[in-house]
Image 1 (cartoon, protein in one colour):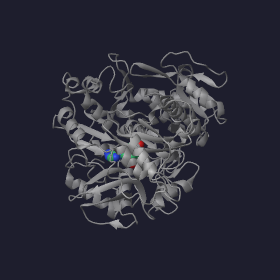
Image 2 (cartoon, helix red, strand yellow; image 1 turned 90 degrees about the horizontal axis):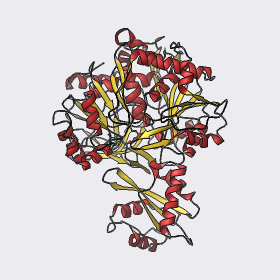
Image 3 (cartoon, protein in one colour; image 1 turned 45 degrees about the horizontal axis):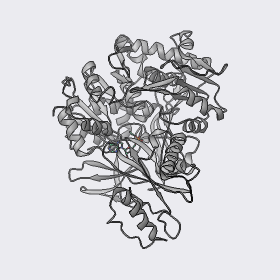
Length: 629
Ligand code: WTA
């Protein structure tokens, strides 16, 4: 399954385009199927309807765990590094992983969870989070992980959207020097969640929590009663594996649905090839299981490949900015995968935090989640990789399930700021505004993919039309990514950022419409407009223009209220970095907010606002420019 040279990559790529079915079926053969597929692929991007490995039967956890047991029962699947530095690491071998997953799967069964039921996971970055995903998959339940930084209301919306039956959670989370309560947030959310029958609560921080009799159960107590054997439920290749909510340019977050067989094949294939993982290496991805990276490249991809990984509970700045390098040194990490925002923050902290540690184990450095600026790329390459480790800038999305454009470590020649070339099986095209495909090199356009890859999203939960309208309708016949992209003279791809109303804050995708709707719930605000602006560490920051008429409160008080409101409705990750109180917003005669102008002002480009002649009230712009903070 692993490509070893650039020539092999080119050959594999050619075959994947000319004979996609033969190409992917050769790879799929390497997995353990309870029944082989009849046909490899059926698809159209019109409805859309994509099916891979049709009528194949399998369970992904047999491939993640059981398949490895004959050789790897005693091999470490995960090292767990706690938030607090200096704690001994907890090791979980493949055998222990098997037992823990089976016991937890049996708890879910005892709660009445059946194949197809949805289970919400709201946990900190502890091994139990990974066990939870796998326990669901073991019995065919569909997991829906909600990132721990989301508020009660966001959690409630997500639970209700997919009518989850059970929540797996924790009393709280350790995060740097803070202890963050989680169970109280779940309690708040569950006040209006009629589908939830049971809640399993992990004792992590030891804080006293409310336990509702008949609904809430103590994790360890339940798990300890169960058998470490649980027959894996037979799943169809196209049965859903999970839902993961993600923000778009309009409305509430969408539940992106991934199915089983294709996702398995692609996450494993991409993991092995992008990172060039070799047996016995130690791999560490710093993501949280609440995001897709934690699904595909902490849980499924590495386990499918039989890898040994580190799970880290903490944050890069605790107890100081040397923590990542301390962990790399401690576990002799070979492959390290993180986000540009972390790299920039650690770069800003200075080299004194890097120097004390031995980083000579490192072989590959990865980046994900947002464009990596050249300066951060160079700093990472030079000071962390000591100019010996390739930097794989991996471009992908929640919807793509796995990495689509990236160098293959030590195989593809890298170029700072470029995700370089598509993986085999991935056919990117650039299109202009009208949807014409732009041929040739040295061009720029909107990034689309013209052929299905195995881990493409199948639908958005409960609303297939929304999936079609969002991804397949803008340019008929193509999957539209929402990203802008340049293809340079060498045919290398550079992602330039979102072309829709989505902003990327520290690698977190946030829809401006969602933040506006949260702000508008604030009593004193009548209307708001949110845009992104360049931020040194976060990549992009959130800039909110808010109309607050006739309030007796001071601007400071109102700003505080707005921040509280966003905290409550979405969570701390969506708090605006800058708030400007305005008396009006620039609108066209048809009443549309001209975001282009607001973006320019937020970026500080006030002398270059472009054409404002179509504005209803150009004076508003003058006032906004004057009041810019
Ligand atoms: C952005 C995260 C540039 C992009 C895996 C995409 C990137 C969105 C890169 C998806 C990269 C991700 N270079 N931009 N290497 N990786 N993005 O769904 O805008 O949280 O559309 O998935 O992040 O974010 P998501």
